[in-house]
Image (cartoon, rainbow, N blue to C red; front, side, top):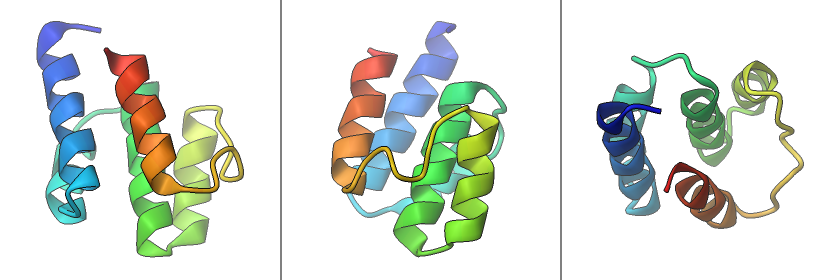
Length: 82
């Protein structure tokens, strides 16, 4: 993962953690790698859009059910990126 993408995705995760889901979404919707899709999936899960969330989970080979809490999942994504 290149440095620019890494920084953008870390920013998206931080924004999501702070409750700025729309700003986070604007970042990840411009990328199509698996990590961006994972963040995208979590954002739609937070919004309560299960069908759209499941679509993005399928794009990154993850599961809607893997994490009970979005905050734990965002922490896992952050750890993965770092």
